[in-house]
Image 1 (cartoon, rainbow, N blue to C red):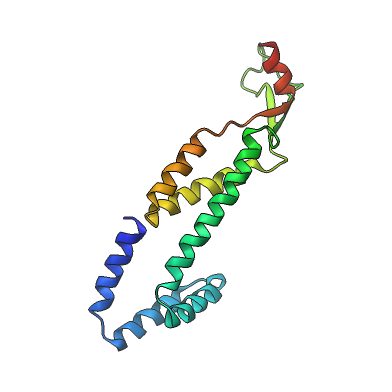
Image 2 (cartoon, helix red, strand yellow):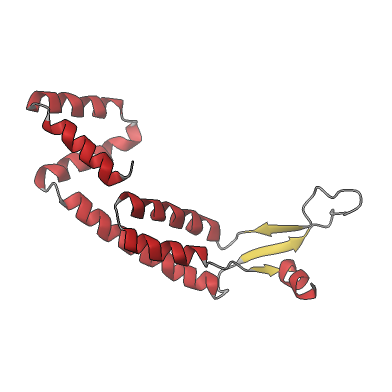
Length: 159
């Protein structure tokens, strides 16, 4: 169930409730929240009271901004300006120890967190029904080419 379907189902249930039942429901949700989520919940209650459409409109604007930011980082990755690092494993031996990796890769420029964030943003696109933006974003994500400096680039040039 995507976010729009979920919200429609929630709206349908909320319309059936009286004001007292709504308060009871909100209090139960608040009571079961982990402590770290309480400030965010209060902000949501405060924002929803003043403008019920504000959250979804701002959410889509923020999502578009986040996608644009990640896309700029993808350009750096595709151009090789941001890449993985690599080094030979001195203990690797194909004959005696073939289960050990021949080359170790590391991520000192923190590419992988950006890629994970991109995948999560793609999921948010589907949830918020930003299908056109999500499609373009998925295309760009699928064409991402990650390079590696260090020993891997030397090894790759030989083969």
